[in-house]
Image (cartoon, rainbow, N blue to C red; front, side, top):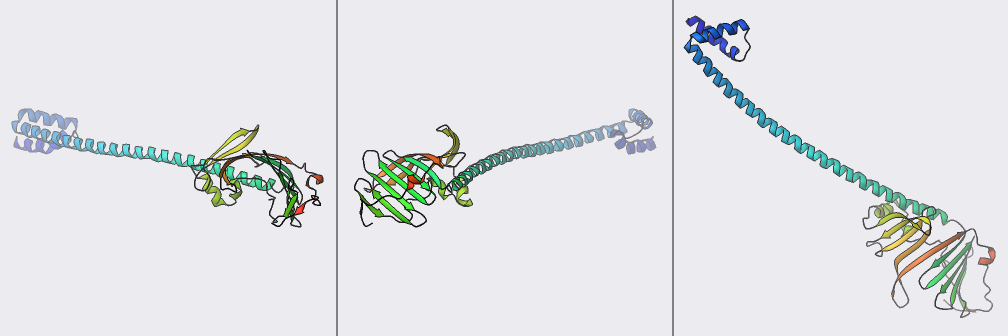
Length: 291
């Protein structure tokens, strides 16, 4: 009997882990029924095994909780990262879109400014300016709305000959070679000649750039703010040509130092200027005054 007990006790660990054969199980179970000592040992081993299993299970549960917690945090960070990436992509797209518009305005305007046969009218609140250019000859007439007096500028770019003429006072004076300017009107876009300047505009959150209709034309509408501009400056450029059609908010100064918030509307005509429109003025009846 003692010999059988030793055999059964050696087999009990495998029996409890269910790795013994059917015949061996039958042999062990019959012996345990008849042997109180082996039965007690078997029960003790079962309790020990259950405790061990419980501890292992608890460890596994705790591990899974920690693992699941890490996975949830990882998923959260993934979502945050995706949101941040999406925002960055949207912002980058907006900057590139704004940069492309700014570049287009500058290039279109630079190209059309090369035209040497052009007429435009600039209508202010208190005056109207008319401008003609044909080849190297430039003529500009300034008319005040509430006065009869007009001032005429005439210049030959090729010879640098130029005059400022007061039609009412019948006097004239020679003008510097840059008066009147040969450039077509444009606002702040004239300064956007480098990549750095265009990017600075594109990333400036105080500047809005949209597309809207103006005088039945598709146009780029710019509202400019910040230290580099006068607040609430508006500029409207024709989408197809880059011509400046309207501007407001540019503070100008009169001879008395008064601030003027000007609004200007521009109209253009291309290839309509004739020789007679820019002919050299007859100054025989005018008196020359020193500058």
